Length: 576
Image (cartoon, rainbow, N blue to C red; front, top):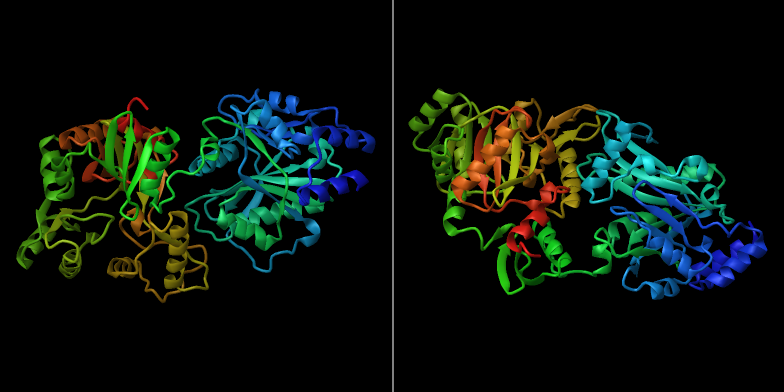
């Protein structure tokens, strides 16, 4: 290791960053090539290696050449005030922390993680899968055609692949600093770590980080750097466990739409749930004033240009009391949509035992739900015996004394989101499921999966250990105490509601025109500006459907990365 490089790193760790001029002079004395500024393209933007630029003006000028839709990052900037002083309206100091792991401090994992493998991204299918994952995490997608080639110092992308279905469940990018800019410290860095929010495998993020560490260790490198938002506690806990320490260096970015959340500063600090937070953040991004009314209930007031709109998540002043009543009372929803000529299941109110039995005999398979309910509470599906039916009716009455019976229709649970009488997003909702490991009971697997779903949804999604889950297990020949064979997948709920552990698959781009038309007709029949419509369909790209219900307070956060919050705020404040 060259003497100046060692001294530079020690000074960075102590927060004693030298000036550009001194840095360049020392690299020249050291014999390193500091005359060629280094910009490595990572597919989503460029990494500009700060100390390879001759002065602050050249670095600021290069940041000004950022391509539209990309995010350039200038890192290892020794004197950020000089760069920011040149373009204060265009540049900002990144609020992220830089962390470093010296490989001499690294200790290998003592726990074995199973169910997935790590490999390099190679094919077009790999890049498409990684981009779907990044979009689900609100990250910029990669254009593999723009990547700096590896033999010229470009990055390497690794992915985590589920061993059962082959799905990509995680990805990370690594950069070898020796190859990228002849780093005299022989370092490396980690970027773009992401794990599928619906992943059921534990430890994917940790294994990706460890794989990158051990890969670069095998190449004879000395350390790994990474950047993490200063308030990302979960990520920092992982990095602390692995031995990372804070590095006193700086990064600079441009003030663009992608980076707005970083340079605008935090919005309202109230503890909103994800369904309110997505709207509040979009309003804050546009300069709309946000007044917190009741964060726990998801209630807030937005004000802009003399216009004032109260909201409870996606339910706003624009939705009339009549439209809200039509959605809440499922029998009224049924009548209105049927009058509009849409396809609906048979339906009647639960009555005495003879009436209920007659409905079951006529339709053979029945759904039970409270007349006024939400979040899948009290819903039981595919009931085929009178005993099951009566038990489900009793359970539903815990949520509403009035209970509906509907004919059961086989298919996929499709949610279509309509805003301003236009379809904005659509997703197939799948019931909660677990994967056996041959060791743990179904009860333990359900609870572990619930913890992961709660962590991924800020506590909004978990699998209830109730009669409906027990009935689903019994139908599959299991109990809570059964040991599920390794690799076997088991649905533990029959409904696909997200609040009961369900997951989503975005199908907006493949939605059949007949389904689009039916959703818009339903929204107009209900005369409601924002609505989530639930349908049973054989497939999203086929025209057949049966309407199930309408939700006046649809969860917008469930449909990211579709621009649902943007369209909602457009509706409320069209001139914002």
